[in-house]
Length: 243
Image (cartoon, rainbow, N blue to C red; front, side):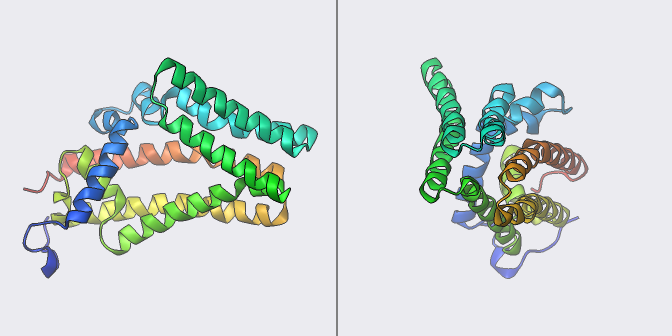
């Protein structure tokens, strides 16, 4: 099923900005392991782990936050708990550098952990260790919602690149609708995190704030990633690429 696009899309030439963004998002997704997931016929454990950064990437994402939660719950010593959390992130980054393996995700985690720890120490409020996470979730949710509002859903940009279709999916009404819904689902995940965690932050409940950050991290991300993969694969089997 196809549907005519608005007048400014009829020429068949997509805006340069959208093409550039699509290529950048798709390239980043491919490097993160989503490329292998996009091409897989079945969502086996190995491919899914690769898409989430592998066991090593999962440990690097979870362990610093988990150690902060355990340390602060047991000692209520903010500097010590932050030092352990940031120190572990630094070790992960150093090991990757020594092994000359991709360091982007570990380095990003270290920078985020360091900046969050610095903010919490400056204010002497342990809950401020989570402020940058709120900002990140808010930015992601806003970007996703805006992409749907302007009819360039981010999930479509990524999927189109990974499925070797570019932005041609915009000429197929069903794909546009499905990608918009999937993009809204991802925005919903980030908004849900904010909806649950912000009240805990305002209440100063550090232990539950740290716990919910862990629970609403990979345990939410992984199922949504699988659902997105299943929907996209089914969509491309049912609806061929636009010519």
